[in-house]
Image (cartoon, rainbow, N blue to C red; front, top):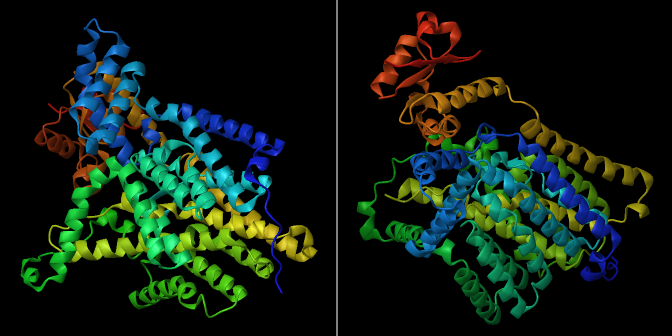
Length: 584
């Protein structure tokens, strides 16, 4: 017979241990190290158009304002306060967060002259908040300080998950977007959820917190839905539970007033579109059958990027099989023993993780299978069960909503394209560590035979090394085009100081426009949406490039020195990779 684990030690006592104090000091040091790493990075280091395009648009708007404000006899802090006050007084709540964030960017630009500082100043505090939240979360599910410390550090590494279209974790903000500010507060919310999931009145406070942080980014509303689905899966449907969850949802959505306000119109379009698909009278009005996902966004939709080369029949079978594995524990809960039920929960989570992120998490999943082989004979308790249902809920809410919205976009006229910012699958990276933490907490390595212990440690070490290698390759190692990018930014800095304020450049780069504080031909998002337009700035002869630039109303164009020919004589600036040439 399996034996129950010993009674867990209270969180409050664990936090008072010297190991926890040491963990906080380590988190502070790691946060400072990430800040130091980011200190020498400029806007050219950012790899998300959400960030670079925002910087570019803000700099263009502020370029004229900054020179005008400099002539006014108004203290800088007073001007910043006026901007903040204008946001609160002039805008509805539904537009408050984005406007407030823009006002923050403007304030940093006015104070320091470099908008990138808006993110540099956030690296340390947000990393520290995230790490402390992860530590509390892992303490709650494992009751082991050392294990919680290691898992918190691993969970903070920025690892890319292709199906969610972005990184999870924190680290340096090279792939930063507004979602990172929200993400820093997610682990604390999950800690509260695990701690109070069986207390009705305290759950109201948990959902209130989840709603409040959702105002930082609308994807947080999906985490509220994930928590509700997980509780239904764990407890089963009952009238009392539905009443309690209705109250929790009400509190959560009310607290998420900014996010819900911004989503409300989209929800209306979503529901009306589905209604049009169901009602026969509306079928004639549908004209969405010929729509397609834009090529630059297909990686965010079904089929997942990792499976595009698979035969459609095999991929369909894998999708159906994953849904079946996700549902098996729900269907057989009352028909199997506790041990078999735990096996089903493990297989369900394993199938979901493998389907959603096998390419990124395969070594962790291999380690999990080795740990489970030796830990499965123990009763793992409520934390393992709740984690399994949270993973299932992420799959149903995230992947299920993606399939539904993708079908609606392709088949319903005027249905909006739902991007990755409304994907619950973006939380999958954190849940893999929670799941592993529960499994590791149940495994007594000292009691294992030497060969089994070495095997488990070896599998875990391989997974850690692969994660560290991924972080190094994406964030520390210089990219193949790093030298060319530095040369481009060198031209931008020269242009800022030596060209008229109304000058425009035949360049497809938001970073160039931000540094030069001048208008460019295409922003980063526009470049990705129109690769043929971006090619006009580089391809063809120098004469063709200048002709295209003149046709687009640009004042300057960039040529490569090796192909410039006679145009080198008229270049106003140049370096190893670029020549800046007046179009006329």
